[in-house]
Each structure stands twice: as C-alpha cells, then as structure tokens.
Image 1 (cartoon, helix red, strand yellow):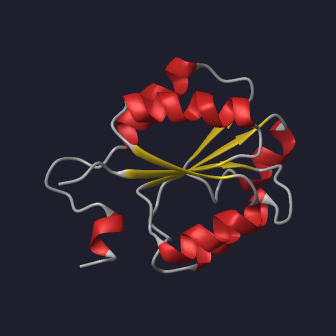
Image 2: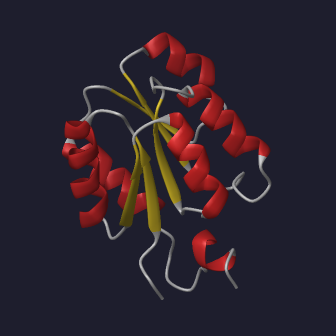
Length: 132
C-alpha cells in the first residue's frame, strides 16, 4: 500500500515547508495548493486522506473550500484540519472541521495530530479507493 496523501492548502511558503516536513515525518505523501482555486482543482482530481486548510486564502476562501469538501460525498469523510490565526472564525467553523490549529502552532502539534489521523494498516486510503 502506498503512503496516505495529505493535501496542504496554504499560501505562506514557510508554513507550507513546515507542514510538509511534519506531515512527511508522520508518513504522508504531500501535495500543496497555494490558493483556494488551486485547491478545488486538486480536490476535483484526487481524494486525499487528510486536508490541512488555511482559512485565509487568495482567490477562493478557506471557508468556501471547506464547504465544498463537506458537500461532496466523495470528500465528506476526509479529515480536515483548519489552520488560522483568527480564533473567532475558527470557532464559527469548528463543527464543520475535524480539528482546528490556531497559529502559531508547533511542529509537534502538527506531527502528533497527523500520526493520529493517518489511515491504519488494512484501511484503503480514500485516494486509492477513488481509483479502484
């Protein structure tokens, strides 16, 4: 079985690098989208095993991306971790997300959460299920 796929949706290159390292060490293959429009295009092509979603994105907001994920039956079960520096917005969306990480978050927080969310051996990751 291949590694599970994590889609990072974040427009800050430093944070993308930080998340890529933490999720990669947790056993994920990484894809990244730098804006909401790019994220929606990737989500139309692939079903990731995990989405890490910044709420403040160019072109299409993180909130709109989250609503698209939750309304698509193919994506509805994918765990979504919201990242934001704005606690009041995160509180508004807490019921639609699986987890919320308030910025600044630590490497260990991201890594430990990714390990917990990684599909277990024997479970077919969504990105493999969607191609088989």
